[in-house]
Length: 79
Image (cartoon, rainbow, N blue to C red; front, side):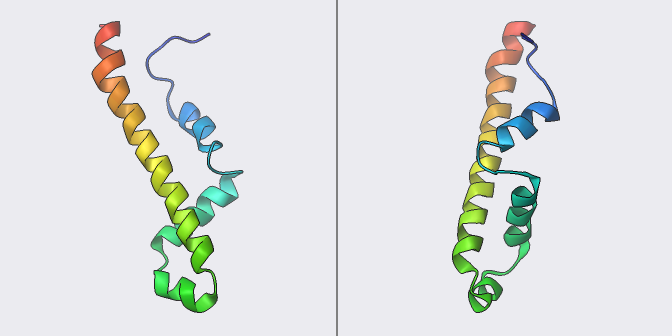
């Protein structure tokens, strides 16, 4: 088992599967992030837009927490 503090983007992509089924769903969430909510409302896709943006926000928050933990807790242990 790899015990290095940073495993790079591969580890991030593995965590992505906790919220998104595949890369297409992840890219769809990014699309909804930039699409104005009024357009989604008029297209009848408001709920898909809302939940896709919510999942993307949770994913980004988890990534930020993981980086914070690595920098403040794990990195000083390995030095």
